[in-house]
Image 1 (cartoon, rainbow, N blue to C red):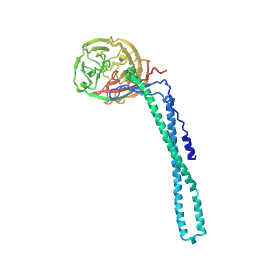
Image 2 (cartoon, rainbow, N blue to C red):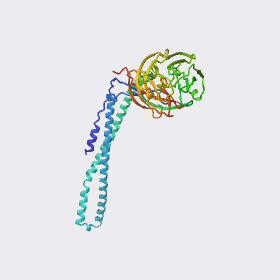
Image 3 (cartoon, helix red, strand yellow):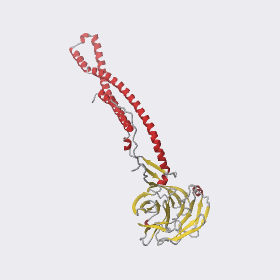
Image 4 (tube, rainbow, N blue to C red):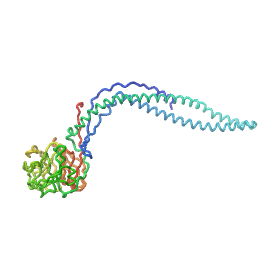
Length: 455
């Protein structure tokens, strides 16, 4: 073991320098966005740059060095403590022997004749045992002085460290304010920049209401203004043409209708969508798509989706005339269906919202009859493998890359039977009809934002 004075000497040789200004470094920021939290808010979490950037900062490096030296001091204190405990035990033993020796000396004082050779040799041996106590006591005196000096140096170092922390805090606060201001601007535009991302997770559902039959659809308009929160409700998958409108979600929950629409044609299935003020639905017993304007209360356009199967030829796994699924996302209006030409596998077509003309088409290799439900997010079709309990998003097809991948994203089918599942880009949520329950699922998307500083 090194003498305490050597250990302390190494700790007392501290070189304190004033911190120099750090150099601005290009920094990239990543944003992990949960499109909507449990309260319906956009969540954008910043992933800070690599920590190695901080290690290049002179002030941070010096602060870290000082903290390491303080840690070394703490270790030395522990060494001193162990040594003191060891010596204290030795002193206690010597104290007991001294007391015994004093007792014998008093006895000899009272009766000098008892001083025999044997007793003399015994006392001589005990005196020899006590001899090492003298340097120990001397070392204690030295240690006491070193400990006092040590405490003074630690106190001085702590004051220097506090000064550096204050200086770094003042310096970094200004820099941090600049970064925060810049970051706030980015986060303010988070939803705009993150209009598209990859589906990572589905949570929920939140049960909004329990009403209607086992099958149906409910929706809001993703193109509506923030002040427009109307809800539309279409019960059953056939033999109905009544659409109920509610001014808000709270009115929908309370059952306070604002208006009803009597469509000119019955609908087929539950895969309707409201987009930019119009209802798009599949006309019963046909592959015709109808565009109905809520404002004018009349059909604006109707067009056949060529070669699309209908009337339970290529439905989802649950049936219900779900052959043609109309949906909308950040990129526009879509139709998902199957054709004989594609061997009953899913076909994706992007539609013109006004004319209903097909703008582009992609053929997938996933059987329509093996799909539980599907929805579009950012031009990617996500397909569940079942409409029953245990369902998950099993397959996705990107229209951007014309490629597919198998996925494993669980979705909690709380009420055992899903007959409608549609994504709303404004709400960043999935609307579901779950065995007579109107539910909402939250989706988490991932995207990386490149800043202007990124190379």
